[in-house]
Amino acid sequence: MVRNNTTDIIGASTFVDFPKFGLKNIPAKVDTGADSSSIWASSITNKNGVLEFCLFDKRSRYYTGNVITTRDYVSCKSAIQ
Image (cartoon, rainbow, N blue to C red; front, side, top):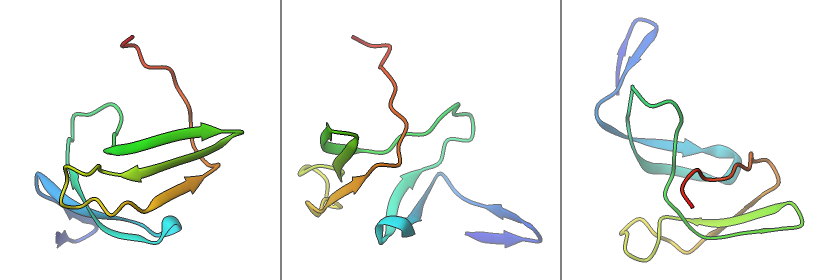
């Protein structure tokens, strides 16, 4: 990342941190025209308001198998059935 006064300039891909979950240097793509964001997750379950998932899946070199658990999320139905 290059710092330019008060504006951060990033490239087509970068690494992001999720300190709330103790995660650092997660690879991410940058899409400046996106209306929303996405992240590659697998093994997703939602039981009694608790969301559990892993980042990436076994096909990714970044997959660790660590399960992330949170109650702080927004649920929406997919337009694709």
